[in-house]
Length: 441
Image (tube, rainbow, N blue to C red):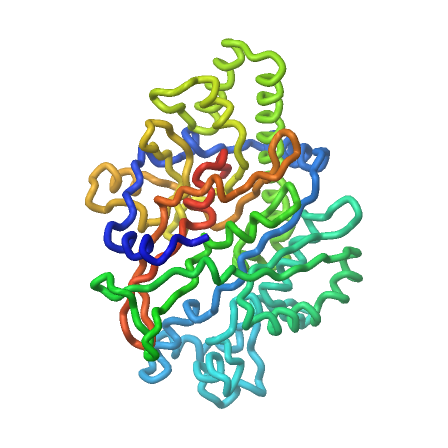
C-alpha cells in the first residue's frame, strides 16, 4: 500500500527523480504502424487465440467538476464559456426544456436546482443523443462497446467500473436504466461489478512548507493517491486479458465498427506478443543456448526497445525481462490534446524500455528532455490492453512491477487553502513501468 507517514513527508521534501529520456517513441522507433494486412492478421489472431477470461476495466471515479471548470468560474461572473453554453444548450444530450428553458443555463447544469452535474461523476452524465431520442451516459456507452468486442465464449461480457463509494447509487441507477434493454437488444449477458479505490492507499497532504496539512479539527488531511492506486484493484482481476479505457474515452455508436476494429487490433497484438514471449520462456526451460539468447536479445531490442543492463548476468536478465505482465498501448497523433506521451527511457542500470510519461515527469530545464518532448508525435488516450498471467498460467503480482520512483507531487486546494498532494505512480505510467510494453498507432 501507500508508504507510511514519515516516508511520505520525506518524499515531499526530496521529490521524485526526473526520468532519463533516450528518445521519443515515434513510428519506426518505438511505435508500430500496421498496414491493412497487419490489421487483419491481428484481429484474426484475437478471435482464434486461447484466452483464460477477458474483461473491460474502466476507471470511472472521476468527477465532472474539472470538465466544467470554465462554467463554474462563470457562475458568479458570467464569461464567454457561460454565454456559449446558453446559446447552444439545445445541442447537448442532457438538454431538457423543462429544466433549461428560460432559466440560467450554467446554474441549472451545475447545481442541484437543475441537473447537479457539477458534483456528479462523469460516468452518469448524458454524453450522446441518438436520432431515436435515446440519450446515453458514458456508462451506457461502455456497455454498448463491450458487447461489440469483449464477449466471452458463453456470450457474457465482464466489465469492472472503479468508482467512489458515495457515487455507487448513481451508477446503479444508470445501470438499471439500460441493463435489461441492452441485454435483449444485443443478445448479451453483462457481468458488471463496481470496485473502490482502497482508502489505505490515501496519502498525506502537506502545506507549501512540507508540513502536514491540518484540517479544522486538527487532524492531518489525507487524499486519494490518484489513479495509480488502481493497480491494487487491477491486481484482483482474475481474467487474463484486460482492456482499459477511461470512462469518458468513449464514442458515439456510429463509430463503433472503427472503435472495435482497433481494440481487436490491440488485443490481437497483445496476444501475439504473449505467445511469442511464452514460446521463448519454454525454450529457455527446455533447451537454452547462446543462439537462443542472441535471438531473444535481438527481439527485445527491435520489438520492445529493451536493451539489457550494461552489466548483468545475461541469461538471468533475459528471463527476467521476458517474464512480466504485458501491455499494448494505442497511440494517436498528437494534435494538441492532453495525454501521456510515448518515450524510450533509460533506467539507472543502463537498461531501456518504452514508457508513457506525463509532462510532470519531464525536466523542462533539461535541453535534451525538452527536445525529446518537442519531437514527440503521439500520445496515449488511455486505451490499452493487458495480459496478466505468466507462461505457466499463474497470475502475476502486479505490485512487483511498480516503479515507486515515478510518482507525482501536485498542487491542489482544500476549502480555499493551497496544499501539495502526493500521487502514487500513475496506473499506465509508473505502476506499469516494469511491464513488457508495445506501442501501436
